[in-house]
Image (cartoon, rainbow, N blue to C red):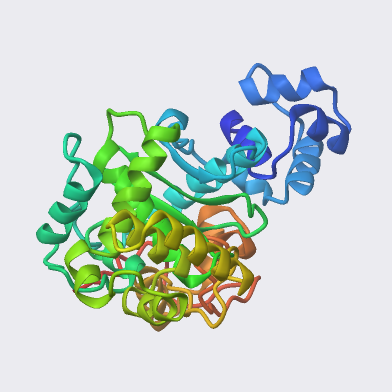
Length: 361
């Protein structure tokens, strides 16, 4: 038995068109289209060639349906000219991550979702409201991934091969998901996480989360969330020069450019001072990088989950086999966490055992 939608998802995950996959497998375009729509089923030999071309285990294609992430509900943080196939590949990866999430949720007690959806307030007010609700006051935000996870956001990493996609967020029913590219600097990844939180909070389930207006709102939310006005005004003098900006950015663990923009937004830098600071920062390499930046933040939930599994003899290869994906595919979702994975035979308790893990904020 073959699940047609899984052929489609695997093809999109690899960024292939029907024509490209048709050529790689050696079947007609019409036959491949019929496989994906369920009109006909591939023979065993053909399915084996499909699995090889798509780099998925044969078992993947006979597993139950995977709910695709809703295309219209995704907030993409990506370059404006990112090819649609790259976005589709990232969306397909997100679908696989939701499958992993369901597997984890059936075995562990995860944090309850506590993400308000505030459609009316402006980004600055929305950021203040979330900070107040989460008890942050005006202090610098802690590890952003840990913070999101503590409030029920399921956070996974993106395949680094698709560098054009920085991040994206989506509500899958009542559960919010955020996906982050690990190829960014630590500071920029923190901003991406806050940006996607802004989409979840301000655009929720029923407001447009794409387009210039939505992106501007999410950027303003992230800026206000990471750099509260009262804190910035209390730490940075008016007309701060570049060296002062570089020193101050450590307080909020943000990029130099992000802090410079915030200072201008709060009226602490004039237009001329802002342009001059940006030019000087660009000369010093801060336009696209963050020299001597902070360490990349990673997942606390996923680390605890796999640590708990290992303690009971369950390995990453066991989890991958349960999901009918490769260990490499699994690892790409896990922020580069060090996981001992040995392919082949398995030992230890059966995976049907309910391993409970209570995560404490």
